[in-house]
Amino acid sequence: MRAAVAAALLLAVGALAAAGCGRADSSEPVSFSDIDSVIAAADLRVCEEIETEARAPGAVEERRYDVGFACGDEDEEAVVVATAYDDDEDRDGAARRFEGQVRPPAQGAVWTLGLFTVRVSGNRDPETVDALTEALEDRGAE
Image (cartoon, rainbow, N blue to C red; front, side, top):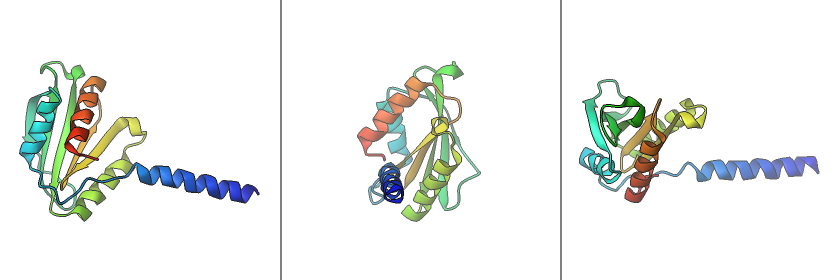
């Protein structure tokens, strides 16, 4: 009886975990202009934008954005990294690696949008992240 209950519990936990690992449609065309639009839709300003040199495997381009409602107060900002990939396998692999590295989960989040990953990690303002999350989900990110 205990084995059956344990198996049912394990299946339920697995189903919940799989439900949280959805990925956006990779055939939807997305560019860095779309990332800029998502940031603007969240009523955030780009305080600094840098094209990064170190990239995940399979990445073709990556940009780091320091964003906030107002620039100048790092406590009210968030760091967003948008990375473009050639295919969904590389994109999904990068998203899985990020999800596996970020423990506890409150330390960061990753979304997929087209052939992009969009991640927020490290110290960040919760209101800024909430606004960004809503704008990403409105755009179809998962």
